[in-house]
Amino acid sequence: MSNIAWPDLITEIYADERYKLGTERVETPQEVNAADSTHYGSRTWVFVKTTSALVKGEVVTPLAGTGALTPFTVVEATAAVAPKLIVQGVAQHEITVAEPYGWIVKRGMCEVLCDGGVTGRASIVTSSTAGQVVNMAATNQEDAVIGVALEDDTGAATLVTAIVDCGA
Image (cartoon, rainbow, N blue to C red; front, side):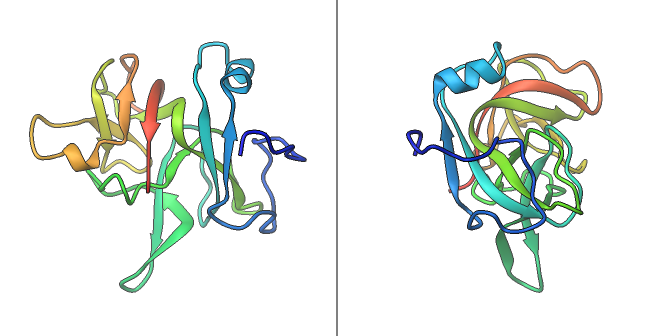
């Protein structure tokens, strides 16, 4: 995957389904570090469609229809402690309603939006605050851990660097 010559930037957004939903794209450690000198390791992105505008750091889950989930058609996560396999990834740039197709991080080092109480080295789970994460509670939330925060947040709706591993 990482040796594919992609014709566009990972931050581009589209009005049409340029790639099949669920397509994965891997950045090498060199590409990750070149994009952000504080980030290391490889990073896996997944191509999605959003039904609402997303901002950097928002955690997303599939759109819930009448009884069924629609994988890779995403909205901001609003369920506290959503199971890890439901979480699709984390937006790393704005994706708009006018151009709803784009790439989100599924696995690797990235920036996540926090609720104001995230501490460095803590396991993180989705919050009931749209698109944000919180520290995992002491018990019974292991299946919902989507990553580890690498630093303390500085208040509500702030970004922290984390290592995430979302979805299947």
